Image: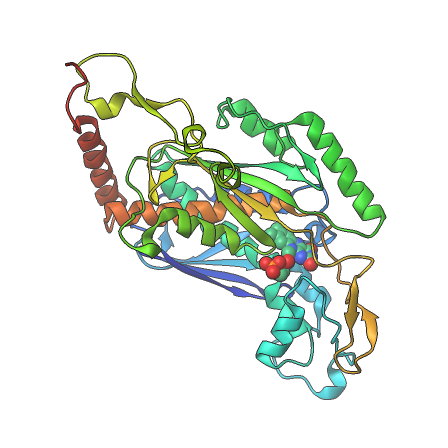
Length: 405
Ligand SMILES: Cc1cc2nc3c(=O)[nH]c(=O)nc-3n(C[C@H](O)[C@H](O)[C@H](O)COP(=O)(O)O)c2cc1C
């Protein structure tokens, strides 16, 4: 928003998805293998529908990168929809005569999806004109942009991970005192069909998805995103739209089907006294090093943000995803053409997409943090941004006096 400007275009069954990202400094090396891996991560997860078997999301960079390095120009991404061919002429971009168009117009909105509001708002007479863009297929483009943001953040030793903490009524006994970024945890998560660190809960989650599928129902859940390596000072309390907690909440809430976001202990902290919520400070050991370098906390209930500014702790955000709105046994709806009581449109669909949403959550967090980092550091080239980074880190290591009396 302040340094990175980006948008996406494209329909679910159109020719493909486009993303345009402006503001990435020149000289960022792009690892195309990592880009492909990130795209594949979004496609996984127990409970996805048939679509993910058709697509192998491959990103083509069509602008802003030369010989594997960003030029400073806008970066354009293109992701082809392989399913496009199967949907002709339904999503044909060029004019078609009435006789060539599929005849049935669909006016049976799915409660919980964008169908009704989109039909009314844009004056369409076919729900297809709404759902093609409202579809979460668009999140593939976000993950492409997020993969660039992650690679930028990696240059500053900032890493991001996600895991599922609840799904379909099953709550994971998620370990809180582990290093979430330890290689064994990250590997285990990529192997888990539900991106869950609690193997027992994962089995129950998979069973819940299978049962929902069997009964024609859908499930939601909660995922957590963490970011490590952030210095004190990203974001700001000086203006409402610069507060990083607010910006992260918007970024995560904008993911389709996300209906709640909390930072740190968020909702639980509303039910506890201040003495049990705020993360007390102490100085670790003695010595002549500046106080700031030895400042510690025994808890991180604030989730790494105070006053809308990173406080040097791990950033922790959680997002609640509602169940998918397209059910194989559709909920009651109304045929808008006749007023008749009907069942909502049934579209090939996921039963549960919480693990995939977690990967999208990583992308949205990465983009927001990369923007905040570049806003802090400035720089047209990576060289300039990294030099500013080193200067800032050095200034932090000298900030405030020694703890010795
Ligand atoms: C990764 C992912 C996959 C999704 N897959 C589906 C799906 O297959 N079918 C569906 O109806 N909704 C799916 N959704 C949710 C809808 O896109 C979302 O509910 C819809 O756009 C309406 O927006 P809202 O729920 O934010 O109000 C998915 C969401 C995400 C994040």
